[in-house]
Image 1 (tube, rainbow, N blue to C red):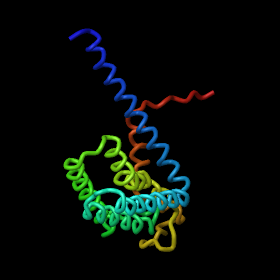
Image 2: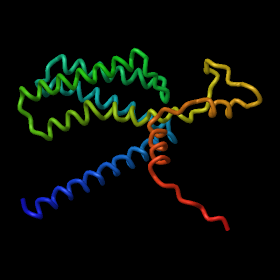
Image 3: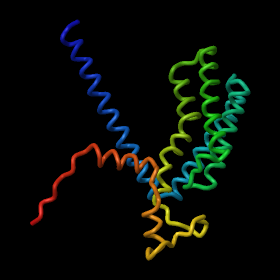
Image 4: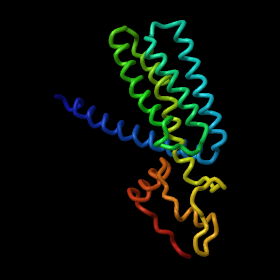
Length: 200
């Protein structure tokens, strides 16, 4: 193997590192946008669900997809719409969420089987997976951090006043953050060195 061949492997490693950092930065930025503009995020995700469902309806007339694949995709979009009713809260143990995850896995399996039997170009396969399978679940995944800093409402099940704290202080101190933005913040605090501020 030539020196340039070895150098190509080093270059590939550097490119993978840059791509990973870029994706992480993009996810962090999107998570902050969703956290800041939850109402707009709900509208955008609702439009994504509607467009994806309309794509499945168009596939009925234009493609030879199996009915199980089409019905699985349409059912997943209906469940995504149900998940959005409580947005920005996402209940992981709700029947709609669990069934949506199961339909996502089933739709991936059906799509792999279909595209293995029927020839389509790589760009067509990638378009189906990107727009019909990954877009809405990815948007919901990014929006998981939106409920980290939502103020308490009168629907809270537990009594928020404890001791001398007011409602908001007690709410923020007692809640455990579990979203995507919290994960990125933890990674930033634990992996990146802190700069010392000079006191003048």
